[in-house]
Length: 514
Image (cartoon, rainbow, N blue to C red; front, side):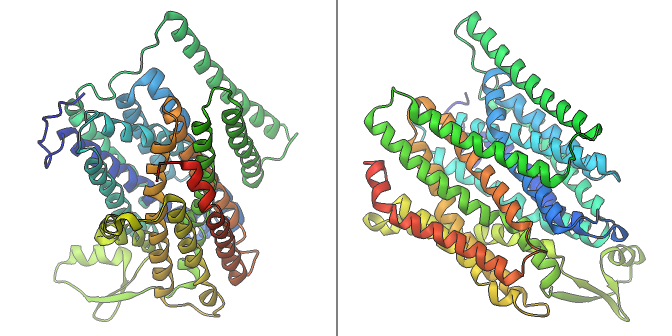
């Protein structure tokens, strides 16, 4: 573990700098891909896309994002038991870079393979890079919260710049080039990670050693069973599809995955509650955790439509801003401009890509909203709302984000970009009321002996939310937009009303934790 006296990075351990840029480039890669993924899938083949309809593209998109978060559970387990966090992050980054390179290749096979590799790599990298950050600090180091705040800014910095770069290249030049740049970004993050690993000390270097040889054997047995079962199921599905016994489509795979995910969530909850060794206080706190997880899943099902429904709305229904700029005296620069801007009599005309809207959430966070909310919660003092109240507020704002779009969606022509800007502003308010509050609540409410599992359940709720969001987005072309946006908004608003009714009961379940 890094010595508590290490203050070489703005008063924090030097290793935080390496992890900051690792996470920044990973998020650059993830959000760069997300910014153009559904637009690429729904673009006509004549324009370099795959020509999928919105239902098929949304099924693939929801499945991909859901699996990426769901795999954080086995990714964290593999790191704890076999790899150690440092190696898990390295291999995760390598898989992500390879996956985005696969997306950049002109083949449908490599497209699906690339999505799978990115999802697996994210499952390895995402939970373990955060774990290493925590290990950089001693148990009583009061710099820990500030360190995670700096780390969180790396996430948003990557999410801010990637749609501007990958989105522009993907939409204006070539879709595959956008994915290729996402791959290069992850590769750059991986290179600086390798050079900076020496600053981690022992943090996350080795997996947790079993207490006995029998324990090690049991771990290997679980690993072989898990890997064997996974490949066995994939092989069976492949054979059944190849022989024509079952018809394999993206929609059917999506549905089967959703059923499996639902069974997993319910099974884990029932298994936890059926354990007989909880104290009365622990059992009450677990009930509060489940209430938060349910609200979280609904919130993310609406919020994470940024990359699907809202992205399609930006592309098809929003009048994008444009700028005109003169030609230069440098021929090579004019040639570069001509790749992504339309030539005019005196220069060039550049229309903002639809994917640029994906940066708004991070722009709002980086340029003041996160700091404002952190200040506001402290300033409220004893009037600071409880966690269930903040969850309710978060659900209300994410609902409003879709409800305000209903009149815009009813318009016959393209609408002002201010509509979507308002939606992303409202969604950011909702996120800041729910996401950091939820993470904090999980750490405080979870019984010590299952702290890691509860954090895994938080990722599982996010996975479920992404899946549900993909199912909703699949209705984009089959349901009138005002009805779709209204239904999504009312769905979240109903969840907010339910959470409001549960504020007092959940507060009682939480006991002295607020």
